[in-house]
Length: 111
Length: 113
Image (cartoon, rainbow over all chains, first blue to last red; front, side, top):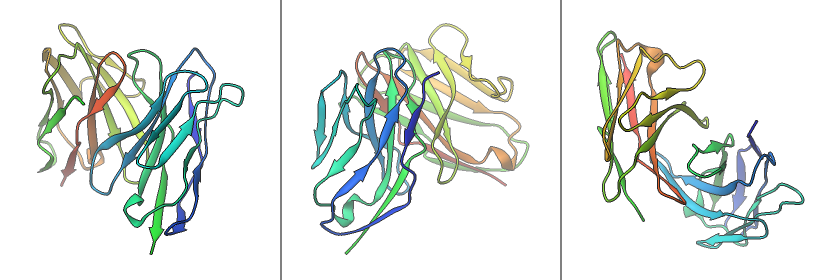
């Protein structure tokens, strides 16, 4: 079936450190891939997405590239800030089907 | 982007009572909406797919008689938790898809005493 596996946290980084959160997906069909962010006490917000192989999604300094050969969609940011502290979810979907989420990775950035 | 609202944002109720949660797409029509449940520090689990004008489709293990879903119009889906118990306490989130993206409501935190 469809599934998403992401790196388990929690992840604690110092401000301005480099961030990578790994995400892999099952290769069923031709899914679109997403990263969502959930700040404390809030709902989910779309951070970035990619709809086909080799697409790169980017937003707020975060990037992720749709790698079909490795079935991966790793999230990266070159220099994290305290305000990036949140839970990050990798997800996939095909068409209008419901999203399948990874388990989430909690990021804490300390000054 | 499109906006999805949920009401209420939080609710506390007594065990045995029923609670209704509304999900609205504010600036677009959605023939389908999804209801998710999120336990503390866990991921979102799909509960059901709400279909306008027809019955909802429930995921395995979700009691349809306990979680009643009504998709009354192209902009409104409701989730009613019937005879709520403390184990139903959770964060409930809805989403509505457009052709290329899903938009999430802000969530409803339910606490059953």
